[in-house]
Amino acid sequence: MISVLVAGYGVMTRGIIPHIVQKAGARVFLTSRHMRTAPSGVTLLTLDELARTPPDVILGCFESDERSREFWTDPQVLAAVSRSRSACIEMSTVTPGWIEEWHALIGDHGGATIESPVTGSKVGAAGGTLSAFLHASVPDDRAWQVLDTFVTKKYHFSAPGNPSRFKLVYNAWGAALLHTLTAFIPTLQDDLAEDFAVAAEIVQGDGWMSLVAASKLGRMVEQNFEDPDFALTHMVKDLRYAHSVLGEANPLVNLVYQAFLNAESTYGGTADYTAVTGEKNREEVGTP
Ligand SMILES: NC(=O)c1ccc[n+]([C@@H]2O[C@H](COP(=O)([O-])OP(=O)(O)OC[C@H]3O[C@@H](n4cnc5c(N)ncnc54)[C@H](OP(=O)(O)O)[C@@H]3O)[C@@H](O)[C@H]2O)c1
Image 1 (tube, helix red, strand yellow):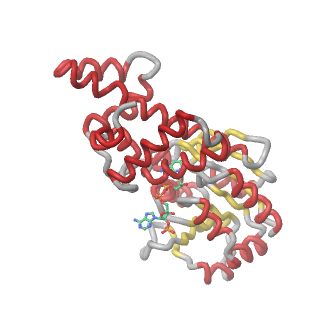
Image 2: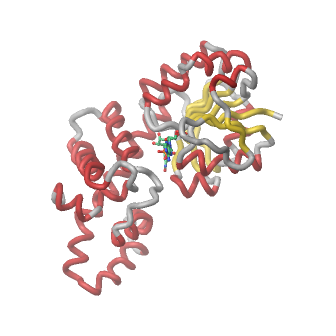
């Protein structure tokens, strides 16, 4: 039976851990800075205890480059990687610069690297239906044994860093699409009054924008930004990182980034990222 260490307990790992526990045929450990009780089927592990149980697979999902670096460069983590020649999966959305360093660092310690940013949000994590953007240094069955429990689509990139480059552009594009709701929906709400319900039915069901509207209009209309699927603070981080791929002078990216920064200061970083469409945020920045 293989052993799996999950590092960090957040929206994404809370969703995927039950799938690993139930389907991977693995012993599952969790290392977390804030968890004091283990989720069902999981054993909490400190990094000091890692030497006794070096894992076959280590899966990290972190809030930033800094936290990812802090974990993976920890001498106890690297010693465990060397002992088990672990398959290391990095699921966080991070910069291409850091992930390329990470491939080299883990490779130097004998580990296999699987760069694997994902999409599908909280619902996809909980349902085990995430899509993964992958670059694997070597094929490693242990990694697929774990990933296949919660990923339904795998897209393979040939070069290290490219999954992260793609993910940052993809997220920035999504952020820009979400932000466009603030340019058009308030006018429909004001001008159509009770007929806005008809408009909402149309924009959510007809036309090529309907995927965006069907997915996000509800939170905007209800101004419901609690219990985040994806925290504002992470979208701000992703847009900041996206500049490393899209450049500093992309006017749309800069406008969208500013809108998300304002939303973060108005609603707080733990609000759902749809708070960029919030009324208070519109008062703050004006509609574009
Ligand atoms: N959420 C999404 O829809 C989504 C989708 C695709 C990609 N991502 C990416 O995946 C990464 C993680 O995202 P996430 O949404 O899972 O982040 P998250 O819920 O904010 O968790 C990030 C880290 O924060 C700590 N944490 C979580 N809840 C906490 C609490 N109540 N108190 C104190 N610390 C807490 C955890 O570390 P410890 O356990 O060590 O304390 C966890 O590893 C990010 O890079 C994000 O961009 C997210």
